[in-house]
Image (cartoon, rainbow, N blue to C red; front, side, top):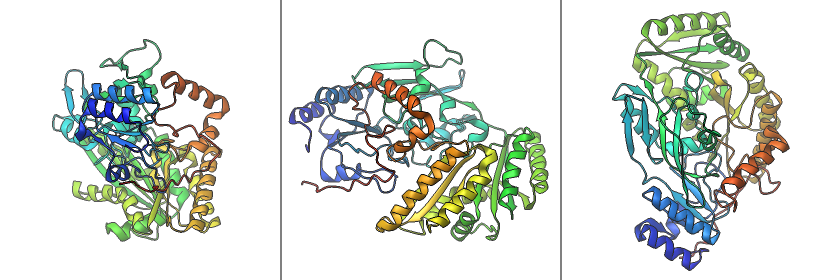
Length: 478
């Protein structure tokens, strides 16, 4: 089995069975990458545990032989968080895919990590309940991956992100010991908040094997509107003004001119391609509140210079507008062989300056960088269609994104709002947390994983490398 000691292979086979331990070339290649462009590295084995006990057994074996372990769901993350950059065992959790309980008295759902996020949405909504986090990849992403990355989504402004809905966890430490944090309790301040610590820890502290999630009553009514602007600052002023008027839409999304042009060419929903900015706004709740809020938002947008404000007349029209926004990445991916979607967040008031900085940086490096994202929470996704086969252009892309992250920090923002640090942003984490903060994070890592075997090469940079971390697939032995 590749680099794994024979004894370790025998123990894995004994613990999981031959059907759930793979080291054939097809499996190793399939799990050598995730959704992050330019990053690939071969594991030594891939395992598919079917229970918490089997996860614990894999971790005990790996600890005994000093083998890295990389937990993984569907692999939709965009920070190379599940690429086995140091080799080792990829631990795939998709067999743990059951919704264990929906507790309508306590408004909770208890699930295994391999549950597909959209499946959870559909299941709870059929009972009149609501799980708000809706990452763009929710049709294929798993709840475990959402928790590991603290995923956000289009409803983050009003409802928050995954961390706001995780009440309790079962997790396996690298030693193979099982811990439980939190539970169905609304109030619990017993000791450090390990639940919050594990959410967003990117699989570097423990392997999550069960989660208890908070549910809400399903909103009674929802409605969508769009606002078109000839001036980027007008759109930015509208975003800030809506919030300043104490209105919190469930969705407040932004697309710049370049993105609108590409999306319209792809989705054909009738967006004018000469506008400077597009806002997609959605409100939910009691019908009277939704109607009142949309009227007030329309007036604010018009006061900020909107060329046109339109409320979707039907749910179908509203869904077409939502689809247009959700299609942004797919539309951009048609332009060039490689699409690099990044994630930087600034305070809402800095959205327009940040978009202008991105435009200047793109021009400086002779690149097309389109920007869209969650304007309501300042989370922007500058996206560069490029070609991994062109090393000169890729070098310019790397320089451009480094300057974009620096600009976000300079404007009071952060290097990632919802995609995580992973391998690609590890070199920039110190910009955000400082040297002392980085040492605190390293101390936490050591407390959970003294040997440094759990998802190594993520969050903490092993050297001074820059963002590009290309590990091409080495020769595969038959």
